[in-house]
Image (tube, rainbow, N blue to C red):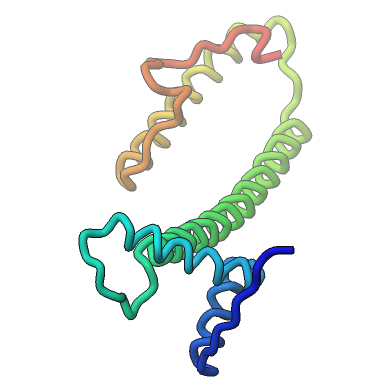
Length: 160
């Protein structure tokens, strides 16, 4: 059996320790034990031997780290949620656009395929230039696939 000690605390002190233990999701006993050990380890390595009225530095540091981690996790979660929703909307919009384009445009006959590819490449370059101008106006980066590319490289297989 482990040794036990009795400590007399005010209600406020006990509540302070309970809140600290709850924040860390630990039992009151293990939290108090760690606080006592940390306090004496810090004081043993400290050049000052006087009693401190505040919690040891390591406990304060852990509190700060936990608060920062929680805040970062919450912000990332909110950002990822918003980004995920926006991405789902864009995906649905693109899917509807492709379906509409395929339903409303006739297939190109073999005799007209070269002319259709040439026209498609020209229109695609114009579209990319317009999008690039828009991205430059709003200060957004160009898509990674467009970096260094000078024009469209559609082939007959792409157009089919």
